[in-house]
Length: 389
Image 1 (cartoon, rainbow, N blue to C red):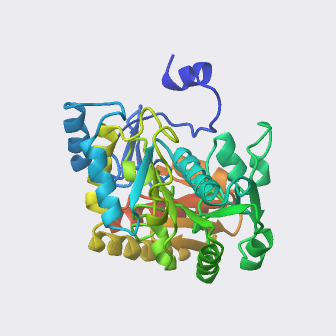
Image 2 (cartoon, rainbow, N blue to C red):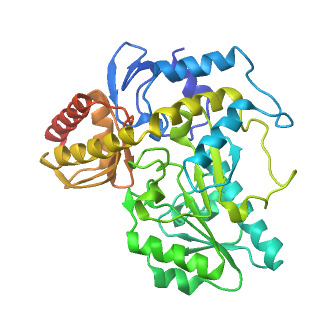
């Protein structure tokens, strides 16, 4: 049997797959088992931040794999220490906790916020306010934190302790009580439809958290590590959260999750309060160190912003596109007509790997994509819309 048949027979059907079996990739291009070439502007949902098989990344990962591939967290890991140091030196954060995914990073942040409040105020102050239309992961707890009703089905009982506000400061204030310990938000709601939050609203939430001693958590799983033209998206909003979580793009293709905390929270977690067998894996951290060495450069980030504006302007020239939402190379495309998923399927048939976010098409291209490759992506999308709408 071929790959697709084996998948259908032996893998749980938790994904609505495109009819493609990818085999290899280089740069912004992927190739299926039949040798067909695809331009990928999805990056594995924002993971392959430097595209497929970047030479420097491959060298860093393979060198580390040949030295030591895993160790228990009872021992010190040079690659993890270096990664944590770089992240803290380039931000206001003081400490890092490692995990394997965005959901794990958010779980860690939730635990830190609740423990900080428990240590300082005692029991009962444990609720976290999140925003409607948010998405924070697929564990039972992060599904509960997600502010979308359609995710709150099947898996009862969900973890308690979350309340959902509109992206409006008065709505947030109305939910603050003696039980509240923190606020969790995405500055750009990726899965919710590439919704860019209002800057004044985000700053008001930050000020409210400081006033009430609430822990402000910013979920940077999709927006972090250069995606929005800054190392972290919250830098676009002129705030300094107490906690930030990141994953996806920092690994460059290998699983990683990080929870970063400011000085106020650096000693909240102690041995045995949190942990993960594969967290801070040296091979994964070697890849992440390489990604960070490339992406954290100011000239590189400036180019991400320029490419984002270039792509937005090119997309707006296409008949059938109503609007474009973007911050850097995090792009949502609103269509005048047609179903985004159906059009995405047609794009794949035409050689463009693209994804959706609710009713929008979504692009999360490699951060080092060329202007010529952006032009090619626009042309394929234009051709597809002409064929389908």
